[in-house]
Length: 262
Ligand code: SAM
Image 1 (cartoon, rainbow, N blue to C red):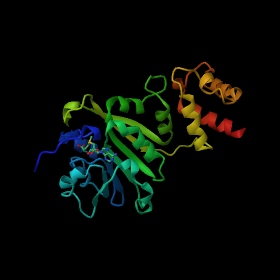
Image 2: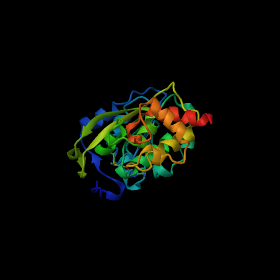
Image 3: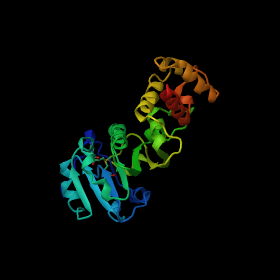
Image 4: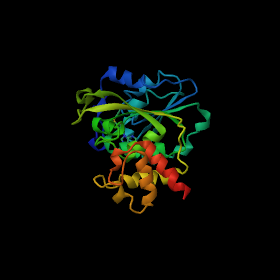
């Protein structure tokens, strides 16, 4: 077969290490009636292991030049849709027909956040998301409060998912080799007891709190009722001088609910 010309613009660094590919595929436990969605199958390096698992596999690949590799993998239980995943209509997925939905992908770093935001804001009831991402993105997503990596996206994801940094993948495992190392991250759906009363307000509050990273809560939340904000901060032994990165998820939940009462 003619040699494939990788497109840098599509983040085409293909994973070569079979042990790593197997390990990624084994990080989800599926059943017959489950759906696995792979984003960016490339030449199908990971897809071939996903096919061995129980359930149906659907892949979204933007580059039609990969048809010649992916055609060989397609069957009744494994379909490839040639489309930009960010443009895909996820409502077309008949989610009611599946018990669980899993997303798994080795994704180009520049669309990691849009992909995560697209999935988490969809109506799909996603069980796990397993992504191979740039190592620093994995560190940011799994960051704890009071670390410089902790940010709005981490807080918002932690509300719905348990985020786990699974393992690091060296840049030598890819072809062509990227500039930086990568890591596999797993986000598993959780059912939480302490829920927010208004999700839109919660999302806005978290984004506003982190809007200017170096500013404190007083500055970032100046358009809010600061008396209420301060009262909740005090519950956490904090003041308006503290910064959002010092505050745990439960603070943002409590504050959303308190503001919602008024
Ligand atoms: N899964 C393969 C592997 O692990 O070797 C390929 C991973 S490669 C890092 C990323 C893949 O995503 C490429 O095949 C690329 O063409 C595809 N891709 C890039 N942008 C995409 C998008 N917006 N929607 C769907 N696929 C995309």
